[in-house]
Image 1 (cartoon, rainbow, N blue to C red):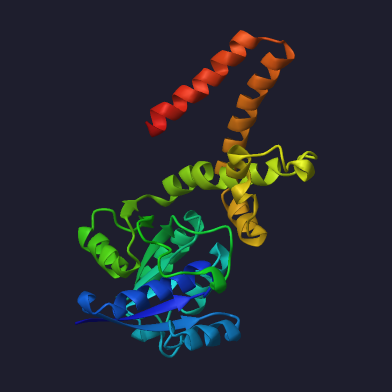
Image 2 (cartoon, rainbow, N blue to C red; image 1 turned 30 degrees about the vertical axis):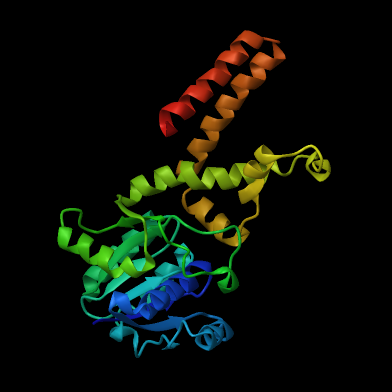
Length: 287
């Protein structure tokens, strides 16, 4: 039987979902897998609740951190870097440490540097899963089932490391693993994730929003779904990735101004062409 000790830092939506997924996987006897979950949250009552609910075995401390085969750091970027710096001497030698932040450049730069000096293996990670809600109460064991997982390794030619990461994360049941440079990750995530949240959050501020009932259907729901967000977390992510995000904002503004201009000119023919361009672009991308 494979035995594993996993440390979870931060028992919010993502951290608690990881803990639950590993515990549930271990409870299926066909998987021949045993896991010990050590967890830390700055709110001690959250850690206590995790123990009471049975998906945390003990509190993660500096003393037992070295016992972890895998440490998953599920904090905001600045807090992640601070945790790695504060505990750099306590991670297991050759142990695997993976973060789950929504941006990767600063976290990976610090993680790679500190890991190299202290003899553990740091890999950047970004599970492409979640909900509009936050906190342990909304976590679930199936959060990552079938979802993509982006990993940012320090060495792209080390297939043994890539294989080690995929095996360590297997109990979470991700659907696929993608390998990316930190710069590339942050550039694309500005478009695929951050812009969607930013535009949705701005869109809902229309003075017409208060009276939308009776006039809205699926398109309104789709457009506003991610307006409901964790403002503290997204503010930090936006500022950290502001160079890429501002480029995306400029691109969108430029495109919107094209539509605005032709409508001001009552140029229905050009407007139809712009709309057709957008439709074809969607078809090209998604098929």
